[in-house]
Structures are given as C-alpha cells and as structure tokens.
Image (cartoon, rainbow, N blue to C red; front, side, top):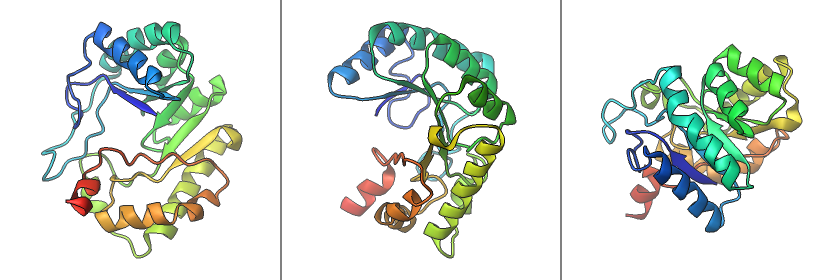
Length: 219
C-alpha cells in the first residue's frame, strides 16, 4: 500500500505533496515501484503525545474535499490500481467515491453514521480500524488487561456496526490500529497474534510502516 498524505501536518511527510502535480507524480511513482493499492488522506491522524506534540488539527469537510478530490480524479485517470481514501466523514467519502475512489479507510471504525450509510449505498469496501477515544486523547487510553482479546472484541463490535448499516461482511477489512492507543508491547503482541484477529473472518490491514515503535525496539 502506497501512502499519499495530502496534508501539511502528517508526521512523516507533511507538506511534501500539497501541490497537485507533486501529489499525482508521487502516486504514479509508487505504483511504478510496486504499490498494489494507493491510500490517500487529506486529514492527518497524527496522535498527540511527547513525540508529535498536540497531534493533528481537525480539518473541515470542505477543506478535506478541496485537498483530496483533484488528486483522486487525476490518479484515477493515471493508474489502474485501487484507490483508497482515508477519511472519517461521510460527506468526504461521497465526494471521493464520486471522483473515482474504490474504497474507504476509516480510522474511527464508522463513528460517523453518515459514513456508514455512504459506504453501504456505494457498495464499496471499507477498512475499519481499532481506535479508542479520539485522536487527541488516544495515548492516554493504551491500557489493556488482554490487548488481543480486547482489540478483537472491539473490532467485532465495529464489524457488527458496519453490518447494521447494510455493509456486507465480504466488503469489510479490519485493522488492529498499530500505534493508535497502543504501547510498544501492545503493538508487538498484536502483530504476533494476528491469526486471532483474522479469526473474525475478514482480511486484515496492518499499518506498521514508519511507526515509532519500530525505531524504539531496533535502536
């Protein structure tokens, strides 16, 4: 999965691809380098904490659409791989899908009912990520008695929530949310125990690249 952040404040590449031409060129380059899927985001999900400060600022739907739609339209004409859009807002999802996106990646697991309705109406796949709390406070919620069973249970709840909107289980991908309301040990245990999460019967998306815990455990 090639990640394309159309944001000024993402932790790894914020501001590098705000220009339309640069964004499109980077997306095309990632596909040429072997990306099977492009994931575009126009609102940073950088968490608050000692490393990233107060975290990402919330973006209005209009601004998110302004950043996102022109790039989706251009990439849809330039590449054949699926285009995923990382958003938690129904109105943004509708605009992105109309522009040519193929699936929605929601880090909040359908906290916005309008997003659930948008995905169900469009009959497109959706990624549901495990997240506790909201982005500004998630690092204070990294407390678990049994991280695998609790994350599995909370993902199962998100799965049922999606099905209540009429989203077919065969269109749902689950994400354990590595680095979101998780400490280093939680991340490692979840990665080791991925088969337990896969037992829910959905494909898994594991976003582990460029996460802080990798540097901390490797030095």
